[in-house]
Every structure is written in C-alpha cells, then in structure tokens.
Length: 305
Image (cartoon, rainbow, N blue to C red; front, side):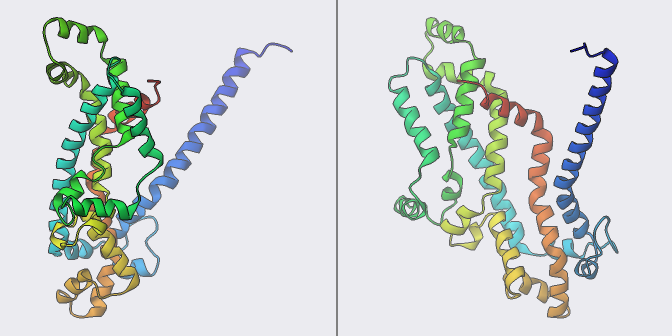
C-alpha cells in the first residue's frame, strides 16, 4: 500500500473535525432545546402556550406566571427549607465522607478490606422502602428535618472517589513526617489532609448538593408536616395536581387572586414553567461555577485505586 500524503491526511482530519463539530452541535441543541422551551414558555402568554405558538421565541411577553408563583407562600417556605437541607446536608456529608475516605486510604488500617466490602455491598443491595421507613421511625427521625438531612448522607461512589483522591494526590511521605513529629491521626487529617483536599471537597459539594437539592422522595415519604417539605416535593405536588385535577392548594391560591377559576387555570398553564425555572436555577448556577471541579471528579473516579 502506498503512503498517505500529508495533504490527504490533512483533508481527512478536516472532514472529521467538521463532521464531529456538526454532530455535537446537534446533540447540544437537542439537549438544550427543552430547557430553552421551558424558559421562553415561562415568559409567554398562557393562551399562546395552549395554542402551541411558543416554539422558538416568547409570544406576547408576560410575567403573569412569575407573579402568581411569587405570591404562593408555601413555595417560598419550601425554598428556604431546601436551602437549609442542602447546605447542612452537604457539610455533614463532606465531613463524614472525607473521614471515611481517609480511614480507607490508610494501608495499615486493620479490617479495611472487610469494611470496604460492606460499603460496596450497599451499592448493589438495599433494605427496601418499608424496612428503611421502620428504622427511621424507630430512631425518631420520622417527620423531622433530620431525616431529610441524614437520609443518603454518604454515597459509596463519592466515598470511593474521595479515597482514590487521597491515595493518589497526598504522598505517604507527609503521613510519615507527621507521625515522626508526634501528630495523631486526627491532627494529620485536620491539618494536612483537609487543606490538601480542596479540589475533592468542591467535587463532593457539587455531587451532594445537586442530589440533596433534587431530592423530593424523602420529603414525600418521611415528612407529614407540610411546613417541613423541601422545594422539590412541593414542586412535584403542584405539577401532579395541575395534570390531574384543579383542586390543589396552588390552584386555590391562584383562584383567590384571580377573577375566576377559569382565569386561574389559564395562569396555571404558564405557572408550571415558571416553577421549573425557579426550582432549577440554583442547580444550573452551581454547575456553571463548579464545572471544572465536576469534570475533575469524573476523572478521579476513573483512576484505579
């Protein structure tokens, strides 16, 4: 076979890059369009949404949906709850995960293999909903804020990622030097491991923060008091109510501020898009600011450790 000339190779590379670029642009548009549609629908006229006229741009710009959402007091109380649950849960999860990861990263930790096996076992098998519910009730966590904060406090995947980071990024020489200086494990962990683990802490904050913010199931099952509901549980309830019937609390709230139930239903058609925008905004911003750490976290998890 003859040798391929540089000109032919350059032409084939250009064709590949053009095809690859066009392909991924199409994939990006397919992924982003539903999000874009929700955004433009949230600022469009409700009647235009029903007629299916909102496709590429807002039609008859209107903020009537956002005004209705902002007047719904239960939505704001649940928003505050979600912020509290997310912040507190992330802090506790990071502390527990880093402590467990540090222990499992120690080569001389007695019983490490057995404990690691128990952790991995939970990734494939779980107790189920009913046994978990009974345990939460017996621990007096049912219908308390702590059940939302502590449920799913540690992710085994995040634990393994943090362990791999500590093993590969923090030299054992630092541990030996600290031990020679008389430092305990707690001192070494607090003064050496934690300061050198800022990257993995940011990664864990993204992972745990997104999971905790999007969690609606815990509030749905383990909370009875509506004042304790997180935002996503309220959001799910509103969207389900708007699809099934028109007698939910959100509809009643809009009916009180509208001339008629028909007007309330009209506003509800656009309010559901506004609620989605309000609920997903913090997560989108978190991804935007922490994207480089999120990508690094994926690469850390791909390393052997």
